[in-house]
Image 1 (cartoon, rainbow, N blue to C red):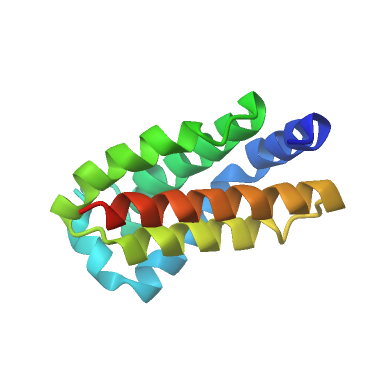
Image 2 (cartoon, rainbow, N blue to C red):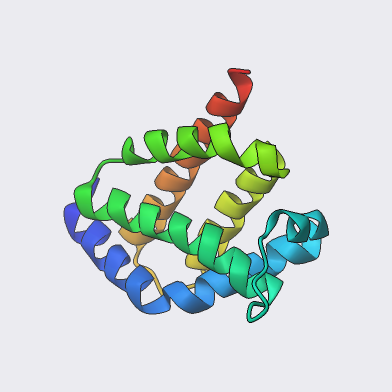
Length: 138
């Protein structure tokens, strides 16, 4: 992993995280309205805001950690844990894979250098493979 590109990309994620996560959450709810039922909605939350907070922002922090520590394997434990919990609440492999794909799709819309773009593709492919792997175990 290109250390300089990873550090720059993590910084860009930090500054753009809120808007990026809100967009991905809104898209998830638009394409998968059944996800609304999985959210515990407190009276002050809108569904997209809640999904952004509990899922997409958490995922974004995972991506930042992978970049900062240069360890894609950090995703293994988190995504394995998620597979053990989320299906009980109606979250499927399709939901998780869509979140990963759309998150990185939006991330690539930011002004990124060539090495940063390549990093996003590498991490996206790694995470999609982990999601598929943990779901295929059962």
